[in-house]
Amino acid sequence: MAQIPVEDGYMIIPTEKGKSVRLVGSYSPEADESFFPRRRRCPITGGPVEDVEFSSVGTLYSWTFLHVPRMGLVPFAQDGGYGVGQVDLPEGPRIQAVIEGDMGDWEIGMKMRTKAYKIAEDKEGNELCGFCFEPEVES
Amino acid sequence: MNRDVYVIGVGAHPFGKHGVPVGDMADVAGMAALEDAGIKFPDVDRLYNGYIAAGGMMTGVTFAKEFGLTGLPVVHVENASATGSTAFQEAVLSVAGGNAEIAMALGFDDMNRMGGMMAAGFSRPSIDTVLLPAAFFAMWAVRRMHDNGTTVETFAKIAAKNWNHARSNPIAQRRSDHEVTPEEVLASTMISYPHTSMMACAAGGGAACALVASEEVVRRLGDSRPKVKVLASQQQSEQYTKGHVFMGAVIGPSEMTRTTAQAAYEEAGLGPDDLNFVHVHDAFPIEELMYYELLGICGDGEGDKLVAEGATSLGGRIPFSPDGGLTARGHPGGPTGLAQVWDATQQLRGESGDRQIPDARIGMCHMVGAGSVSVVHLLARSD
Image 1 (cartoon, helix red, strand yellow):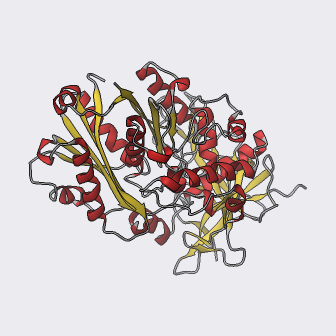
Image 2 (cartoon, helix red, strand yellow):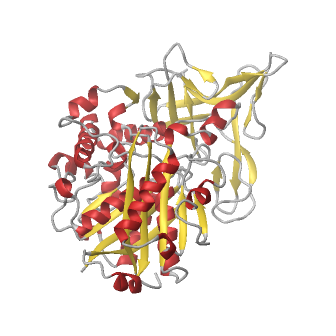
Image 3 (cartoon, each protein chain N blue to C red):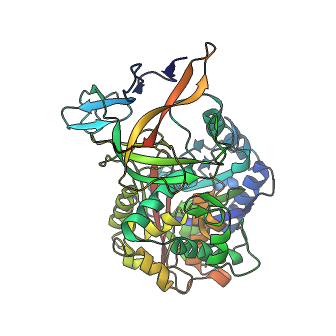
């Protein structure tokens, strides 16, 4: 079944293999700054903004591991918890999200790639997805 | 401020997981403050109720009826963790602006009965992931360890200090029967690396109240105790910074504390060296460590040294969280900022018993609230 964003306007999940999930935000030409998620107007100048698709790879700014067995609707029974990180995208925004892996897997400054992850399922069996980050595998 | 404002009375109900109904706790705190000030409820011109989780609409105005039906304006104030501080500010500004001679700020809550926000976030699928506040401060801590070489032992020392400060505080949620050591703090359950359960703030129920008044009222009351004057009252919301986090931004940029404190220092015409004690939003020890620097108590990157020297312990150069802070006095939500005012007022009057700071003349009360906001008040003994 297909992976679809649980809410519109935040991310693009490509159907082609080998393509990465991309977050969608706003770019303010006046301030030359980008923001996530999308803004109604530039928070700095009040001027207009346009949609922008961000790079799928960013840099880990900080991380933690929460020893709590579930986050929202998603259980983490196997690991007894989950990682959370802040990832700086090349366009500027800092994104806070779940990060895949376990204690010892993360280092500040490492590359992280955007990924869809299942939050729930709809009646047709489609995966309703949010986003997370996973450590980028060096090729 | 257009005219001088004084704290004339404070009261509180002990914090904890005791299950006392919120209305009962609010009543105890409110009546204690009225008695402390030597006034009756009909003397109060405006009432600001601060609560987050205590109930739905009407809660504050319903509780107010127990004090009396005097027809006074009653307002519900909510600013997450900074709710009590914001209610206090509204009371202060109403007197400063001449809309009241006496105003009451009353905070009450029970975090263990919290439904609303968290329940909603956990019950429906949403792209705005529900990250626990513990995660945000833990990420401050991991970054700090990376940038400054801060150790987990430093976090444990700060938490142990606050546990020990609370031992003689009659309203504290966590009153240890023994001297708490950093080793004990480190050995407690891990919550969110590097923070353990004994480093996390105590969430329970409680109530606290402060009454503020004009100089004319203070003169009329003729209280023989030292007077407590509000030197500054400042609140700020987020300003844009590079790497600003919008989604799931429970906690805003830490710089917000620096700019709010600067505004407060400017308003009062003094600086960090003039302070005798400081109350902060120490939900986790990384916060207290960073606030040493953001409030200007020491230079950037020098906070760890203050901990090593014991400078922020009772008996040290500048005690932080002298009542145990959020760590051990507790953080029920609405009343927390007012519990700071409760303790600061008693410190400035010289009424704090075993935890009294000798010759305390000026104190700061700082809170942050999710969303997010920062609130700073400066209080001073005014002989």
